[in-house]
Amino acid sequence: MNIISNNNEKCDLALNALRNVIDPEIGLNIVDLGLVYQLDFDDEQQIVYCRMTLTTQFCPMGESITESAKSALQQCFLDCRIELNLSFEPVWNQSLISEEGKRFLNQ
Image 1 (cartoon, rainbow, N blue to C red):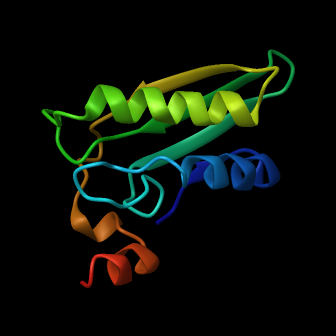
Image 2: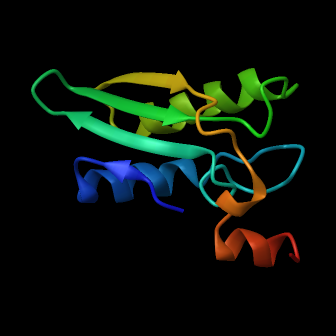
């Protein structure tokens, strides 16, 4: 799992917050599931950018997952605006699941 970021310290904070967001159909958090692709931080404009995906474009829980992710980031970065962009490039696949996630899923 390689998450692109321009600030490692803030990225770690954001990832810890996003680990609280669980995909309700799978039962695994969105970080270990490999749904978070990129986190960037614009300190001057006070914006947190998050690029993420879903397991499928037609995920029935997609809106719930993205709203929960946005909320988790907002709670972590109170003074920032959160810009969450959903992307399906690259397409999610099981190889994006972390080793911890694979153990959780018994894979």
